Amino acid sequence: MQKQQLSFWQMWNLSFGFFGVQIAYALQSANISRIFATLGADPHQLSFFWILPPLMGMIAQPLIGKWSDRTWCRMGRRKPYLLIGAIVAVLVMVFLPNAGSLNFSSRLLLGLNGAMWFGLFSLMLLDTSINVAMQPFKMMVGDMVGEEQRAKAYSIQSLLCNAGSLVGYLFPIFFTWIGIANTAPKGVIPPSVIWSFYCGAAILILCVLYTFAKVREMPPKEYAEFHGVDLQAQKEASAKEPGLMKLLLHAPRTFWTVGLVQLFCWAAFMYMWTYTNGAVAVNCWGTSDPASEGYQAAGNWVGVVFAAQAVGSILWSMVIPRFRSLKTAYVVSLLIGAAGFVSIAFIHNQYLLFGSYFLIGTAWAAMLALPFTLLTNSLSGEHIGSYLGLFNCTICLPQIVAAALGGPVLKLLGGVQANMLVLAGAFLVCGSLAVSLIKETKQSS
Image 1 (tube, rainbow, N blue to C red):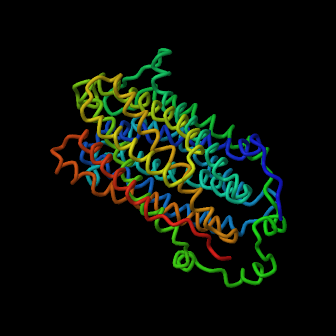
Image 2: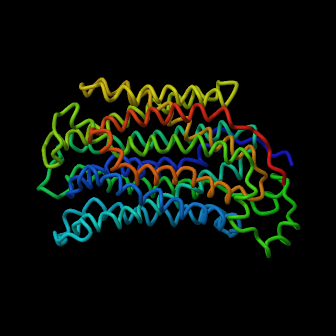
């Protein structure tokens, strides 16, 4: 079946809800270390709080992929999961930043006070719901966009993703600028952060509802014709649906080789999210005290430099389609990002950090668009959702490993959080070398 190519605005509508989801993800990425440090976490504990988000994604996304592959209802195929995830995320975003204001007991349990336990549970729910809302957008591109347009469709998704990041990262400093307090009593999250989460939640649900209303997913027959899937054979096979482990064993080579690149890339960004706040506070404000005005100012500035990363990513996402080879684009992007990471350790002027994080944005743009383009181009249409869900493990697993090792590695590097960003740069260089192993082959149906 030759399906009419989608217009720019059809592809835009397909991913517009991702803008809102990414605001929530940006708020989480830029503020979680700040929140837990404010609640009383030691720097060597910070990476352990980051284990939960990828762990929940590793559990949720393969299941969402598998279930949605077989969900055909009046609301659509992927859209029901998108809506449920968004609603839960909105509720959690209202409660999480109030963890320090709810008068929990200060008594320690396994080294954590009551506020940290509440924050940890809220973080688990938030990341699970964001994953449930996020994954359908990637799947709908695989479902509804032809192979010749997928690079463009994922680039549009990357553009919206980074635009959402830009908004989410800048919220705290914006609210501080308009007069909302950026400091609070010890152990309490500043109002500027709380209001950032409130506004992010409102935008998230509005954007998701827009995509929900504008996008019409293909019914089973049309989908089968578009992807060359034998609908009758698929129905007969549904009674003996292959499990996720069987699908994993039969995954195309591209799944594993791109996954290796992902291993290095996502470990690098895990350390960026975890240690940027501490590194910037020490290098540019000369403080490591979470209760100090300087530390909270550094927390706001982290959002600003992450916004610079998002701008770099937006601009680079427009350049990526101009490369003749996706693999070349991948290598160049990761090497530029590595240079950005390494430079951070040598910068003590807050404004010079713009350049570093702008360069890091090139790697982020490639990570958002190229792995999914390479993978979906290698798949038949029968189990796209399941494979994309499984592929998310190549995003989550390296983050879990990096987070689990973060404390000991930080100790080995002298307790200097900026050194963790140099290590992140080394990881991206390794990732660029692994790109040469990727073979772009098509899976048999």
